[in-house]
Amino acid sequence: MKVGSVYTEKRTAGKGREQAVPERLGGTDFTGVAEGPKFKALMSRKKKFIVPLTVFFLAFYFMLPILTSYTNVLEQPAIGDISWAWLYATAQFIMTWVLCIVYVKKFHKFDSEAEDIVETELKGDHRP
Amino acid sequence: MSTTVIILFLSIVMLTLFITWWAAKRTTNAGEFYTAGGGLTGWQNGLAIAGDYLSAASFLGIAGMIALFGFDGFFYSIGFLIAYLVVMFLVAEPLRNLGKYTLADMINSRFDAKKVRAAAALSTITIVIFYMIAQLVGAGALIQLLFGIDYWIAVLIVGVMMTVYVLFGGMTATSWVQIVKAVLLMIGTVVIAFLVFAKFDFSIGNMFSEVKNATSYGESFLQPGLKYKVPLDTISLMLALVLGTAGLPHILMRFFTVKDAKTARSSVVTATWIVGIFYILTIFLGFGAAAFVGHDAVIAANPAGNMAAPLLAEALGGDFLMSFVSAVAFATILAVVAGLVLTGASAFAHDIYGQIIKKGKATEKQQMKAARQASLWVSVFSILLALFAQTMNVAFLVSLAFCVAASANLPVILYTIYWKKFNTSGAMTAMILGLVSALVLVAVSPNVLSPEAGAAIFVGEPLFPLTNPAIISVPLGFLGGWLGTVLSKERDARRFAEVSVRANTGYRGE
Image (cartoon, rainbow over all chains, first blue to last red; front, side, top):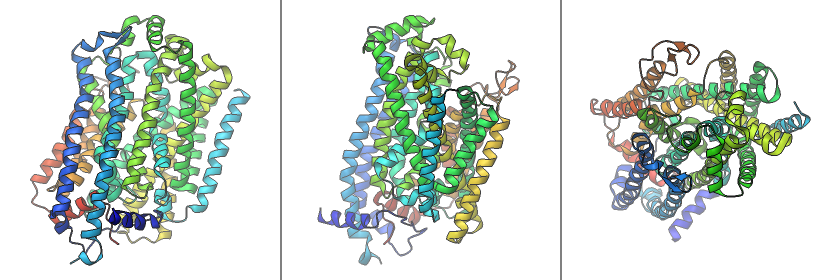
């Protein structure tokens, strides 16, 4: 945790004003970092989180126009005059907000892993 | 034109000019001009994203479509919102970590080829022009209706305002105009939705039953299928909406105004809440207009339904509320077109002039001069196009812009971040195939060619049956990127390692 906080401090020290991104970072051994165990573990955790959820929300999303275009199932009344189509549509809004919250929680954990990689493998003396 | 309208209208003009004056003092270098120095907080940028995104097409267009077509109008709201999940899960953070001022900067973090930057700039400019014509023509028609002034004067007022914001205040002025607009728009929408809900005794069930009886469509108003009768066309439109946002250059550019990926993330969260609440409220606006203004009155004011929200405001709160909503609509348009001018200018001045012609060696002074000149020319060109396009039916241009963004930009963005083998020829084929297929298919679609005179731009038999080509052009963009890559031997694993590490850690070198 200490490592992470030092990093954050350095980052915010410049208040984010005009941080130029260099075109290429010549001296850094990116291949080494990319193939290192820490980065690989981070990437695989990110993938395990992002891929299934992206497939899920896209599938859930496209089911609506598919169901309304090719079937009548969503036209059945659910509550009074409100049909299932409206409930399905509302569910998509709730899904969006829930996934947003889940994403932030999950990526908050990834942040400290990423900061650790920057501190231990990318900064200063770790360059070849 | 009532006094209230004039006072509210002038207040918005004064407030935004004050913002511009304040921003102009800070806008002294290219970084300030294009990204407000990267100093916005997550909250500010989230509001600005919402302000950039919720265009007149959303506020006036969707309210009108729900008023006229019930459930089918709501399809847009769903697509426009879920799109933020694509932005959040796949694009926002890597984009922030890799880019500097423009989308092309981000793609060129992997490629040195000037042609890749040129292609990215070209697709940015194409999207900006389509979006801009749609906004300006809509704005002209709207202001003409609201204030009773001539179309050309209306376009000129909006055009001059947007030019002033960007020319003097750059991204700082643009961002704050968008923030103010987002707040005003939410206030206006919440107030109207509340009044509508009160009229239905705060009961959703009542609202649905009463709206069903208020329209001549009856039961089918509440069911899908009133507007979209061709299944593939509906799915194609939904595809363009959900994938387009993550490729819209003026939205993506907003992510460069924050300091790091974490702040980019919190901006998407803020934007998603605001945009989501707004789109939920479009149901109340649309249903309110259907019940208290009526189908025929909405059509009579504007065949596309764009006057539904202002007319509803008048029915609920009289002259004052209508004036307020009209002023909000005006602010809405200003905020969106300012963002578009800035984005178009960045493609010309930063990508084409600064990086391609000057090879990245332009001095700070030259960059600022180019940025300001480009803003001026983009504005003048857009105003001229909008003046000539007055009589054209341009409503489809917004969904076309989404389609080009989804077909030409998104495949390249995703491949750049996630695909190790991706290379220069893959980037070129993806962008060109996505862009050209979207444009060609629209040019021969029912939007442009219709056997019925006046229904489209030209009279003729459409060669492509769908109004939105995304279902063909998006896969073509992805396929083009894949084919171009595997057919070329060029590989740069080291460069991908660099992009991947930087995209996921935010490391920029110390």
